[in-house]
Structure formats: structure tokens, C-alpha cells
Image (cartoon, rainbow, N blue to C red; front, side):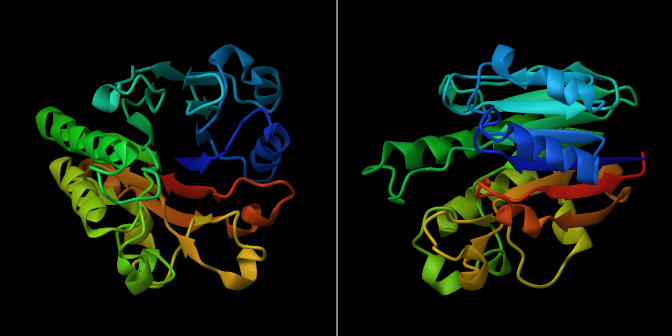
Length: 261
């Protein structure tokens, strides 16, 4: 059995103390971080190792993007893919000794205008998710878990107002369509919604809100998926909303699930 957490940390060096606090208080066996904003060699590995996280698989960039998998369990590097040929550190995979592969993804946010003709970043986002679909369709993933900041809230109850966000990047119909096509191509099961099938559920609250907690205008942008052959082993899903209220926080909250594998 192991517990896995995913968290867009929005700079692992700036928020090293918050990562340490999460590791001490929640002690997930595996922590997948996105938006590390650091070259791999400058990730504070010593501190993580002192807390028992002796294995790390990561891809980094100076000041942007970056994904890392920290683990108390032995893992080996299972590669990466440059989705949409952006040259960004947005994907890394690791394999556990039991053969389960973990994919850590950071899908582009897509800018502010949901039109690829007017906004290059939105087109890059759609291309990224389309390539995810094609890869999953070709590879037919098995014994795999996919986590990360996918930057899309697919369900009506994954956002604070479905109607008001239909034209806002992260919940537009075309983004949702692309994400669901990628999910269907790999037959991925949304573990969080398997465990929490009903009700409003968020993992991100904007920095722009002066009182994010009271306004509660959230979106569920962070996801844990599993292939059908292991999805029934997942349970205990939760989103650590309180972490969004820690001092100098990320605008994302960690998402966790436990797997009996």
C-alpha cells in the first residue's frame, strides 16, 4: 500500500519549507510536484532526503515549468516526453518495483484568450492534450497512474460556476473535450471522482482573490488518474484545502490518493 500526492508547488525553492511541512505532516510515500521552476541540480534534495525521500526523478528548467517525483519507495527513471514539441519540462515518469508506472504531467495553462488564432499559448495547450490522447491510444497504458496539474476542470461541479466559466480558459468546452478524449484514449479512471463522485470539488484558488477562502471561487485543475487494471485499488482520495491557507502558499492544494498494490 502506498499514498501518492500531487501538488503544483509554484517554485520548489521558494516553498521548500512548505514541501517539508507537507512531508512531515502527511508523509505521502510519493510526492509529485509541478511548476518546480528550478534546474534539477538546484532542487533542495538534501532536505527531502533527511525526511526519508531518498529517490527522485525530475526534469527541470530555470525559472519555468519543471516536474519532480519524490519517493520513500525505490523508483527508477522511466523517461519523459516533450509534448507538442515545446521544449518544456512538463512530463516525467518513474517506475516502482512492483511495475507500476507514475506519469507526472504539467499541462500548459493556455493564457487568457480561448482562441488559438488570437492566443498561441491556447493552441499549444490544445496540441499538448491532443498528443496525450494520441500517445495513450498508441501505447494502451497498463498498471499506470497519471497525476498532475492538467490545467482543465472538466466537470460542471469542478468549478465554482459552470455558466460563468464556459468562456474562461480551463473550463471551455473545447478544452474539456480534448481532456476527455485523452482520458478515454487511455481508458483512464478519474480516481478522485471515483472516490468523491458528487459535489463541488476544487484544488486551485486564484491569487487575485483578496479572500480566497471566503469567496471560494475554485477549480479542480489537479488530477489523479489510474488505468482500469489498478483503479479499483485506489481509495482515500482527498484534497488538502487547508494547505492553500499556509503562509506564502502555492495557489494549488495537494491532491492525495492511496493505492493497495
